[in-house]
Length: 549
Image 1 (cartoon, rainbow, N blue to C red):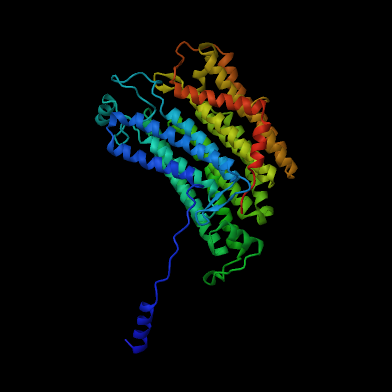
Image 2: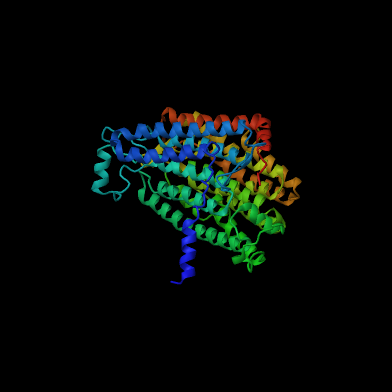
């Protein structure tokens, strides 16, 4: 080693160590997510340390308290001005705390809370070997029909791991619409997707169908995640950063700092367009839009119905929140490129979901295609590319989530010897067997159809109005036609329940616990209140409809 090299090393060693600043984390503004993730980790410890027979009550209590506390934290942040004047970017630029993020997080937390109520239901099936059972497999690791599974049923085991899995999913969903860079977006996507894959496989009855649905969801979800990650890589090559603000500056041509290593690719429009397309494809997969919807009917039908209800509501809220932020914060300069594509996707999604739903004979598959059609209606608000478009989408997502969880909770009540009676023929005459249950389900169906005095009408009116004012009048016309088509199969189910003769061997209606009763009652109450007096909530969504940049 030369003398100069030795001198350089000695000089470096003699210099004082450069001070490294600790990262600044705004824990108070991240409290909702931290509470939920912390509770999920605590739930895992309960599974490891608490006796099996005591886990159920501990997990239910922990989940309810955590979600309620997280919702209270969201309300406190909104009341403290973080949805408006104090909105900002936290966690070293990774998370946005603003109106849309807090509104969507509150909706997701309420959906998660109602989901816990339906997960915890243990009164719908007959007592097995002296033990109450729920919708989930007694021993998830046992082969269906094996002696191990039978022994687990006799012992009264239940898969209480579903509660920390739900909390992990909710935690990822809270981050997803608030992510302010592409890596955080992808991590949040995986955090809530992986628990959902597992939850879909844990049905107590029809376990093979449930596991098949989970495998389909996992494989297609993996492809969608790969597209998303590849799109993120291309956008990084285009902008030299994964930050939403930096990408938006490069798109607008206002960026000042150029990364030397990426100087040759920065500003390459091919990378921008292909990367955007692949990223948006991944998000459209999560919302269930055509042509990325093929997983939806099979997964909705095969998953445990409480999981289906939670997933159909909360996943759509989180995914549309992320899509809104990407299109409105990252890519507003490309609106004339992405709007025509969204036009086409919205049209085929509305029409495709409504038309195919007519042919369905299973109530869960019918609601799955209904969910696809509703994704198209929500896209009409996204296309508006205006503040009214944002607020209308927020309102629609909140209204839709409560209707969806309530509808699937009702489905769990109609049962025969094989479990849930989901074939439509078995619902004939339900209004005569159980008028109250049929009437409640009719309220949810009318809300899905967008009948006046329901939340569905207020939501559709808001998104169609925003779309029309944004120059998408043709979308509104097609949306009205699709709504009319959808109303046919909703009303067909109502006619089947109230104006058909009940079958002698028809299903029975189980009497649920107060938990499921609460979920259904909240769904009905929100559906009616948002339909009869929506203005306050529309104003709330409007106040929350400004993204921080």
